Image (tube, rainbow, N blue to C red; front, side):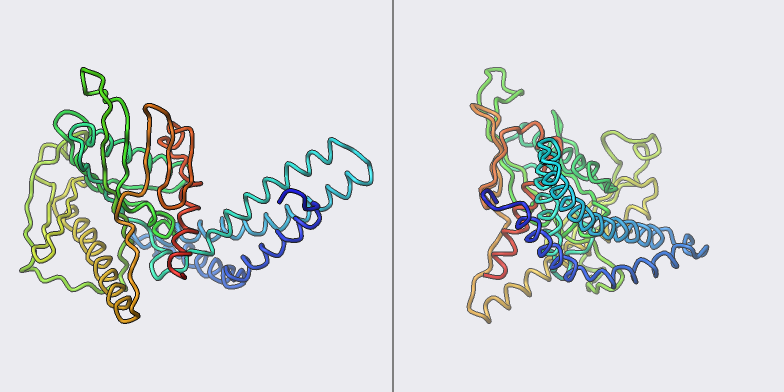
Length: 369
């Protein structure tokens, strides 16, 4: 917004924030917070651990979001006061401080605006993420493990809890696949644009001739199922296998046949869970994962039917979406939004927000086009 007076910029930011407040419906948010606080104070809540954790996560998210919006409104007012003070005192240092805060406010309001774009049926859900090594041999397995770390670090940066359900380790290095949840409201709406193929170009650490290697890993993101969801699963359509957990883990996990693999024969979907000590617990978790994947499949099929009726074509994000180049130059580039970063190390350490925010805007444009 170069060339526009700070007062006008603050006015525009204020108008944008007013729109955000209207979309988020702060009064409804305050009512939800009051209701969730009442639920969390009920001593019987913790008899159902899963529900209790869901309530406390939802409460924490709403309180944080309300505080964030209210804080932005206060910062806008304070910035206007700071500019007035700088003008009255003709103080360059105060003016510089106000300019710095204005730039920070632009970024903060834009980030908040992205939240209002997540209005899909399942966007408010937690996310179930599956990563699979694809073409590239041992390098692809190593790349899949790097991607797992990247998303877990991203979640950690935001204070989101995660749970790894299953990891299948490759023989030489890396992983064949992994499935984990990001337990935060709107995790699915935030991460669904990451679905697709991620491509890595680098000098292979596994090639004794030091040649450049291209590797691929696929990312699948689906919303976590809730009790209100209905997915018909016929027991006769399931093949259940039990096996011994592999890879790092506690002694009890690795020495019993507690891991469970479920194959849904009609669709070919395979899910596994090995993080619990009990075979029954692993089976229950694996069934939840299967339900989530079948729900997403059902949603996609319905969307395709509606697109056919409208005479339009659906856009698939299940293709190559981002390149991570470490040699001969260093860059990470999103093929849909054109967003680039010249520091792959930071991106691989979970610095993904710029990419995620851009793709949320891009997806919204595609959906409303």
